[in-house]
Each structure stands twice: as structure tokens, then as C-alpha cells.
Length: 198
Image (cartoon, helix red, strand yellow):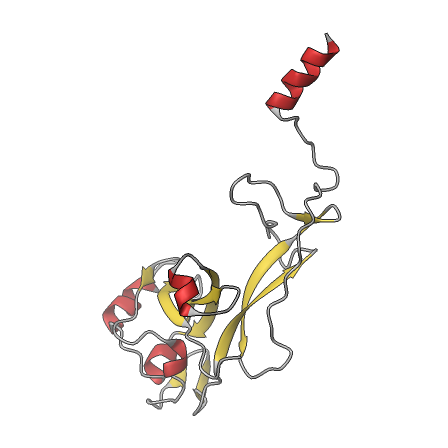
């Protein structure tokens, strides 16, 4: 595991709670047989990690991010408004508190002197993690990906990087169909079946 995972803040989004914003955290990791950059540049793929991480409205100032305070004040006036971080947007480069500012949701309490290094982890399971959690789909066919007839659910989570139990957990789809799902015959197969029946 990397000591300082390259997690970037893609954007900052307001929430219904004016004292809390969400940081869109992103990371890309090479997916190659040998892990080399050369292999990546010649057609390897990158595994993409994305998670929304809620923080107190004063978090950005406390840890020294370069942002426009007026824009931040404006976006919290309504949910789902967005802004970006100026300059260095790598989350793990801003772990030492630089300003003694209170946590707005806990008056009188300061942010920790040192914030822990975080990383993004993928967890796949056979049950949804929250209401409205949609199962994984094949991007080409839009079919639900299953293992033994059960849908596979994908979730990316932000965790403290040093935790030994934190690692990606994947479930290999076996091509089975979702239990109880209605399947339609391939038009070519249906036509051929009709031809053979005649």
C-alpha cells in the first residue's frame, strides 16, 4: 500500500446541511499484468476510484487548501452546488492543520493537529449497501452482473490508509442471470428457432 496515495479533490459540493460539504475524492491506479508505466502507456487500463467524503465547512481553511471563500459561501446557499480547489488539490498533501479554526458542527473544538492519510478502496458485495444502491452493470450490454444469480454491488469507500484490513474486495461475475429476471431471446436465435420449427 502506498504511504501517500495520490487522492485528488476533483470538486467540492454543497449539501442540505450548510455546515457540511462533500469532497469528490478520486484516484486512478494502473491495471496491468506487470504494473509498469510503459505497459500502461501502450494500452493498459486504469482502475478508477471515486467517493464523496463529507467534511465540515471549515475543513478546507483549517488544512490550508487554496480556495475562494466567497464561492464556498455562495455554494452552501443551496444543495448540490459545486466549486473546485485552486492549486494543489491532493488530499494527502494537506494533513497538517495550518489554521486554528473551530469545527462549525462542534463549537469550541478545533480540527485535529494531524489528519490521517486516507485512501480509496473498492468493496463488492452480494447485497446493497444503502437504499437505492443499483447493482453493477456490464457497460456494453447494460446487463446486471451476477454471481450464482445474485447481483453484484460495487462501492468505493474512503478509509484511513494505514488500516491493515483495508484492501479492495472484488467478486468475479460468473455470467449467470439475476434470479427472477426476465430474459429476452436474442433476435437471431429467435429467428433461427422459428426457421427450424417450420
